[in-house]
Amino acid sequence: MTRARSGLLALTGLAVALCLPSAGAGARYAVGAGAVEDLPSLKRQLGGPAQSLAPLPALVVERSSPPRLHDLPAARYVERLGSRRLAFVPEDPLAARLQWHLPVNRAFDYWQTPPLLPPVRVAVIDSGVDRTHPEFEGKVVGGKSFVGGSPYVDRQGHGTFVAGLIAAAIGNAEGGAGMAPSAELLVAKVVQPDLSIDVLAEAQAIQWAANQRAKVINISLGGLRDPRDPSRDTFSQLEAAAIAYAHGKGAVVVAAVGNADAAPRQPWPYASYPAALPHVLGVSALARDGSAPPFSNRDKIYNDIAAPGQAIVSTLPKVLTAPFKDCPEQGYSNCGPDEYRAAVGTSFAAPQVSAAAAVLLAERPTLGPEQVTALLTRTAVDVNAATGCQQCPLGRDELTGWGRLDVTAALRALDGEIPPPDRFEPNDDAGSEAARLCCLTKRLVATLDFWDDQNDVYAIRLRRRQPVYVSVRGPAGTDTNLILWKPGTKRVDDFRSLDRIAAQSAHPGPRENLSYRATKTGWHFVQVKLGSRGEGLYKLVIVKA
Image (cartoon, rainbow, N blue to C red):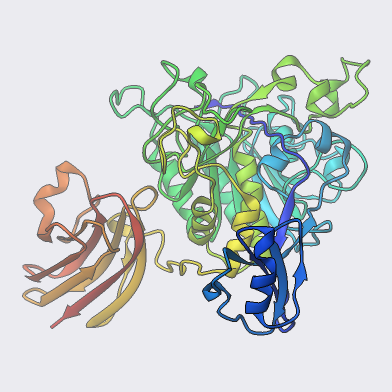
């Protein structure tokens, strides 16, 4: 596996956020007329006090309960009036001057003042982090190296760069700003001096981070995925098991989809591992003009969300900026080596999403990882020709997933309907990975997601000749399938295991049911599988006679 680098840029003006009128007081409405000459007639129809906005053809009224203003003959439109407020803007000098990704992500538009949030542990699995950097004072709460040496010595600079995008201090009048100011950093060093990463070191680091109560794990590295050529595909069952372990411990795992400079050609149509694994939020890069740059890997399934990945500015160990003595901003990438002064890559897009996940968890600590993923992806801004990406179609696509990260929209979505947590995850395969169910009758509600969680597997124990009835009602508008596997099955969806299917129901549509009488005693496996694009809740009923 090789290290991937990433970055993205974004530039906007001073942002504003909509603030609705408070409940209780009378709400204000602007009632528009067709022309200024119509205002007297409109005022008579209103039958009460009204403020004229002439020469604008509109009146302003206040009502404690909304009247039927739309029914007035002279009313052209009715608009409930809110107020606008300035969003909080970090005063750190590089934030305003060079960190264009902050306004593009609407990283701070949710707040009027610097946010005071509870701490959230974020693990950076990378080349280490320079703990002595002033931007990380009091923020590094633990570290471990899985390749020797100190986790707090970062000779490559990659990990320190990633950490700064997440957790650099705000309001300290120097440098830049991190997007998750309350993040506490766990540092896992896995990068060798030659920039290679051993899969064992990575898997151990993921497990360590989960055991250290990391709520978010950022992995800005990747191994080549090539389903058409197994000889160069770097899939690792050990890595997948580590990801599943971390997810089961409640961690949101975020990974870069990878850069095509580490692939056979550019652009590359497959996300790297571990982004191309279930329960990993895969992040691609956007260019400053809103397009999908050719270096950012594509993927129809595992590319979940996009963030700026070009001309990104962040922290660097001062030892890497010291040779550039004439540059005043020591410790920052704009004073670093060439590869960091114009930093590009999905590696630097991923930590922006990790920071957004940490902010959501700071606001709502009870969120499960799949809920955080849903909030971030379902509030993303669709990337298409209107936003600068001529090659991006409307809706989810292989270039940008669900769209561009929007932190403020995700935070506002906390006040709406949030998908319930799936307490059975991860249960993606047979054997020890299946969720074990008890009782003669079991009714449960869980979730499936074609792009992240296509399979749920449950283990049920049957006696020889014991009948069982299973039914599922899948997410609306999907094709949901139901399969029962015999005892001893190790993997579902493996053509070598097809002879172990005991019964199945695979009709078009979301509803399936099957019945079976066990031929031997043992743990059988119920698989619920999405056979079409879509996601959502399903209901499963298992009845044993």
